[in-house]
Amino acid sequence: MGMQITSKNFENEVLRAAKPVLVDFYAIWCGPCKMLAPIVEELESSREDILVGKVNVDDEPVLARQFSITAVPTIMLFKDGREAKRTAGFMSREELEQFIDEV
Image (cartoon, rainbow, N blue to C red; front, side, top):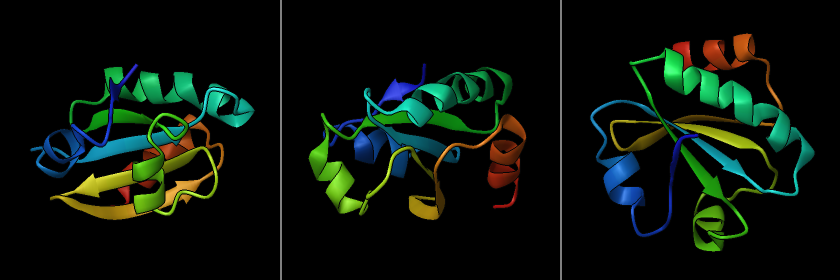
């Protein structure tokens, strides 16, 4: 299911990670987020080159504001402690794989 990212563990789990980290900013009430969740989980179990984390924007408004999250789902890829890229909205597995591989 991806590790739950909070403002308390964000620095250690995302910014200091040895691998790129795919972060899924989501909300429980969001339909597209629910559709994306199993795709993100599949990627987590099938790819060893990335880590996967999830941020519930309702539980973590500080992180949502810090990264200017205005729509969910928003997927961000962090590499070497910095945001490498982001996208918003539902994506197919193929689109998400391409998103990750283009970094």
